[in-house]
Image (cartoon, rainbow, N blue to C red; front, side):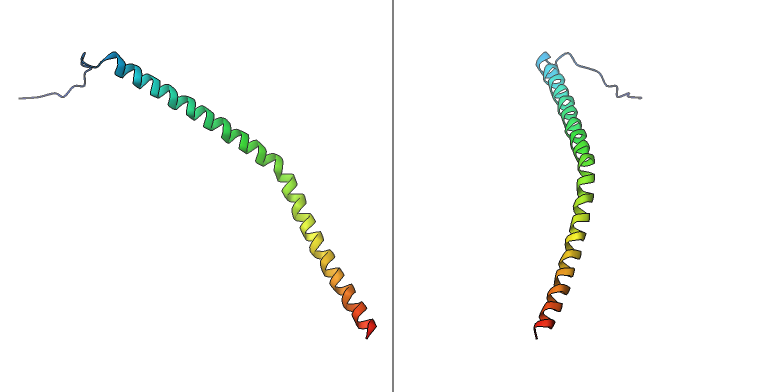
Length: 82
């Protein structure tokens, strides 16, 4: 009483089902390819913007220093007027 469960392709599966499965697999591969291309493009853009971000951080630090200097100058001018 040994029963073996073997997988086999029954002839009752229609050609339309096989075509649908193949088309779905092809669509999934195309979608994955486009997603990979978009990720690569975003990665290149991010690498290109890294120097800009660094320069922006330096400019912000310089603006803070300039603002602090202006506050000190205004404080001195207000002290001289009194």
